[in-house]
Image 1 (cartoon, protein in one colour):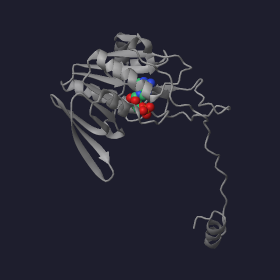
Image 2 (cartoon, rainbow, N blue to C red):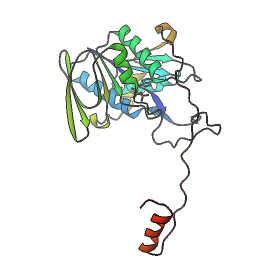
Image 3 (spheres, rainbow, N blue to C red):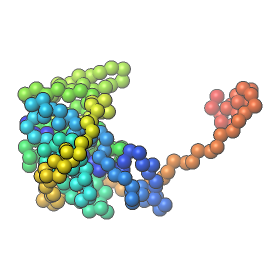
Image 4 (spheres, protein in one colour):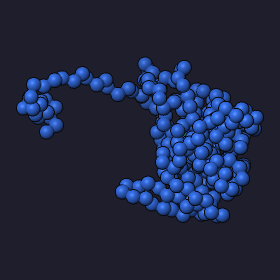
Length: 251
Ligand code: AMP
């Protein structure tokens, strides 16, 4: 069984992002970029499934600029066998529907039985790509997985839902998206980084996959949250209650 793991290159989670002064988007010039954390969990899970013997090959894929190669090398250092880069120009905003269509084309080209994606990308917070891919392929899906077990032609997935756990049985082929508690990704070691440099990485263009990646949604404006005003000290509880009641009007 082959697993496809889509990995997105995003602004590192430690970076405080800034909106561009013209409000057209977020400034990512000279900002540290990393693999989307939920995708790291997806690669780790796919590699663990391979280590258990049920999986023959783990293929990582990233859609975006040429620098996504770094993200793919990281996926291969964790243990993916090979990588695919669907290269798009820097000025193009790749949206979830376009990515889902590219992934569908790759699933069909590679003969994949399972796709494990992150539940959401921490840059756009869309939480759409996995669901759209399952719909386009007409495959069953289990989102926000916290445990995955593979059988010969089924996957059993545990999901964290409000107040408990839900367990689903899916017929393969299927789409799974990862939640935070699914696993803790391994540290990438230097020997594995060196090995990853020799693993195959193929670059493709969206047109070669027959996919139109034109954006469908237009961003009108991106704004930073308003700055928090400085706090004040009040003399006693009565003054506090008075301010909450008459100034803030919250009680
Ligand atoms: P989103 O729907 O944008 O929140 O993304 C959900 C998941 O889809 C991510 O965690 C990735 O696994 C995958 N994904 C989204 N965009 C890309 C991309 N450009 N390249 C590869 N995978 C992606």
